[in-house]
Length: 493
Ligand SMILES: [Ca+2]
Image 1 (cartoon, rainbow, N blue to C red):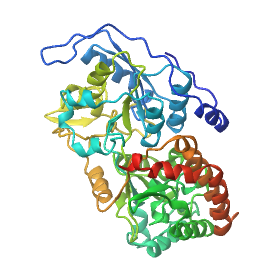
Image 2 (image 1 turned 180 degrees about the horizontal axis):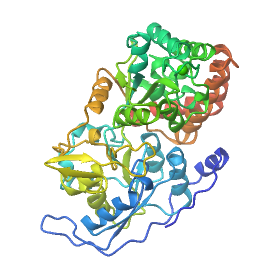
Image 3 (image 1 turned 90 degrees about the horizontal axis):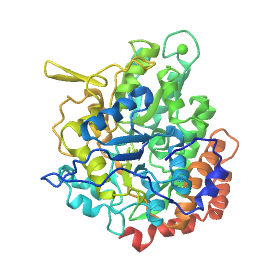
Image 4 (image 1 turned 90 degrees about the vertical axis):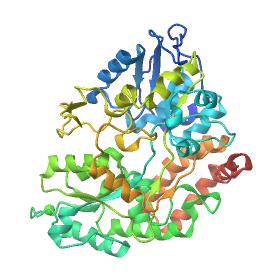
């Protein structure tokens, strides 16, 4: 199969959303043979995997594929669209092209694959697998569909975001770690106006965010107890955007902007541009993933602004909860000639607590990691502009979901961030809906809400005007029907 990236527009995406997903499957190798344990030992097969968070080409993806083939005898073809476009590309691929054997799917997209019978139920494969018994059961249950089936296996612990702050800036200004909105507002003001980097130039902001603060994972420090997105509370799905707490959150966001405390690019920031502002010492606070990014944030900031940079993950403020997300999943499509074979060789073997799990976690020995004197460590990525070490291959070492005794010591910086995340987080649930959900969810959450938030934050709309405009637009996008689907008995049993 082939895949040719092209320019996308929302119109294209919305048009394609109306096309039933799924066409012909991929051709693949010969029939399977099984060894004494019932496991496949066939060589010469081929797996096409459509993946988002696998290491990229500049991180040794070709070496990863070659090592997988060396260990399994199976050719692996990874298709990896640009991260920012991944979900749109996947939906278009499923709608217009041939199906990959297996794909990485964010939870809110699973319903589309189930409604179109693209996702193959995996229950029987799990029951007869060699390695799935090592997986902590709660991870599997977190992605079980309301019809009782498993259509995806968590690709990792979904984890969540925590707020990171420049400790060296706090120290220079004689400030303590903020613990509530009032102390946070003072820190943001000092980070903006009191020259926290000591270069004598007014060149910093306190804070940055992503997509106009429309994504709850990233907006916690300013939104606190408010949810911009549809979320599960009090036993049902609710549109957080219309709740009273959202009014106060919008007022705080507009205040932060009016005081000049936020990176003005936050309305258009991708995760890439937001974290780059942090690496460059332009902002002192960002809420970002509490995993191997704890290491990346420190190393890349130091590589840019100097070794004095200290970055710490701080506990949620008073009234705020960090969010633990439903994990992305690996889904086998009906395009696979032999789904059971793909399951055994691509999914189940990732949990072998041996060479394949080592590959999917750490990468290739001698390229991504090495072992000397019994100590295993990541190597420097020679292609990395920051000269940083590798931190993962597909599954970050701190995001393992089975009971593997890992061969590499966990990074204490990452452990500290995960400890902060796990203090008392809000636990997300799998969103499963019907036609209105599938048709309009992304437009409401990723287009309408960011647009309105960016205008209310920058003073172009009052909070009242914002809410009134939102209610009208959301009604046209069937928000009531969408919520009814999410809350239907079949979906919440
Ligand atoms: Ca400065």
